[in-house]
Image (tube, rainbow, N blue to C red; front, side, top):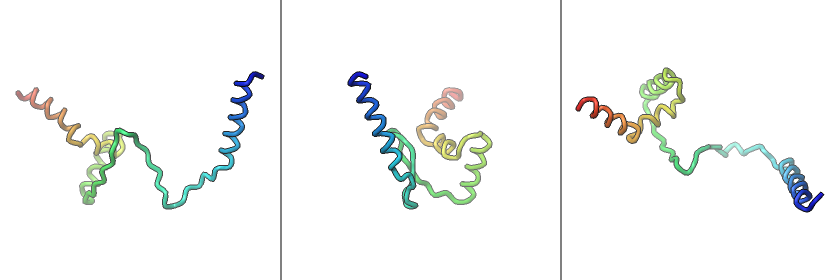
Length: 89
């Protein structure tokens, strides 16, 4: 084998050994989240009626409640308002 192949093989073995030695059990106080640099989290407390209505509407549309809520943001509604003005004006 050449030096590059030997290095790749050596690094592959080291990575596999390291993976085997990692304890994958997370402590109960650790919360796994996802997201990206373009997103921000906004936590909003809703009364029970508003929560149920939002969940129902999301289910009717076949989307997660969080996706439905994100579609209700000012920037999402700005496009709808502009289209309404075009239709009405």
